[in-house]
Structures are given as structure tokens and as C-alpha cells.
Length: 81
Image (tube, rainbow, N blue to C red):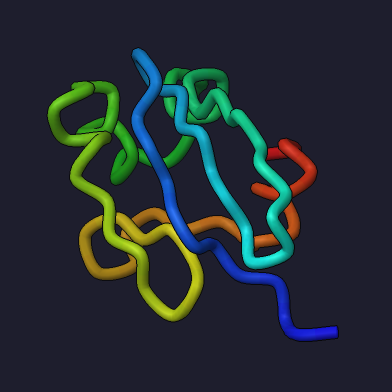
């Protein structure tokens, strides 16, 4: 089985993305609980939706601002941030 990777991510609303994986699985992931919690100050910028939606697909994963924020693909797949 090939390594799990993200093929496509689409903004739904707010901090929610629909993520399609290379095995045709689709997860709808709400990043708001993670981003809006008391976490790392580097993530505060992503509270602004216009910044949150500026992600890239890099090496089969979602990536914000050159690895400022990134999640294990398996966590995105299982919708467990």
C-alpha cells in the first residue's frame, strides 16, 4: 500500500477543510478547536480565516507558511488533531 498522502484540500467554511487522500478517503476537519485553543503563539495568525486558507500541499501534506503549522497526515485522515 502506498504511503498515505493528501491529494486535495478545499476550504468549506471557517476553519473547516475537506481533505481528500490518495486512497480516495475524504475527511472534513475542523481546525478551530486546535487554532483557537491556548496553544503556541505562532498559530495565532491562523485565527484570521484569510491567513488560515493560505496553505500549500507539500510532499503530500498540508503546510502553512513553510512548516509553521503542519499535522501528521494520519491525524488529518482520522480527524484527530
